[in-house]
Image (cartoon, rainbow, N blue to C red; front, side):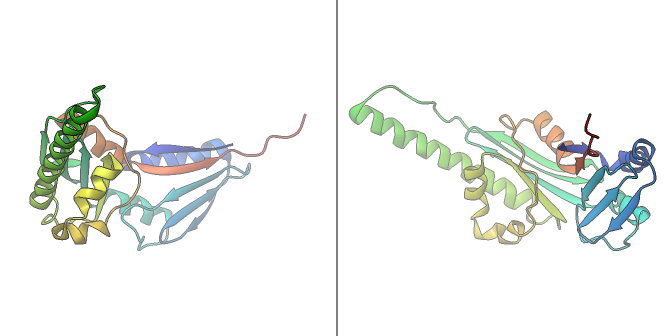
Length: 209
């Protein structure tokens, strides 16, 4: 069985030690973008290297790399709100959240429905424009190492289409975060989730009964 676990950078050293304790003598295949652990019992763990590529191709190099002062940008956009933040070693150093009223759906028909749809589209456009301006002010000049996004994919794509954010598009990396309307606490928790390492675990094959 294969599953994905999230591990905070500060816990990685202990997690690697625990893997060896649970699965026996462990071999490491350390590559610039991926570190693969194979336990004595056949268990496998694959660690995607964040902020890659990895320079020192050792276990110690991986731990030092994830604990370094990387600059992580976070952009969350939904129809009703947005949030942008810069995290350095897990600390939020700059941020802005905001909201815009976007009407919900309606059961009205005919011209009323069309007017409602146009008004709703205009409100959504204003919300995305506000999110774009915040991204330009907070994220564009921040000299980021990576950018994690979340909220609504279409909204994120709309914001990142702005020519002023061209350099940010190449910095986007997984995961894409599903979040509620961005508030300050939502932004802060999203930063924790974005920093976490994604480790794919494959359990050892169980002997047939």
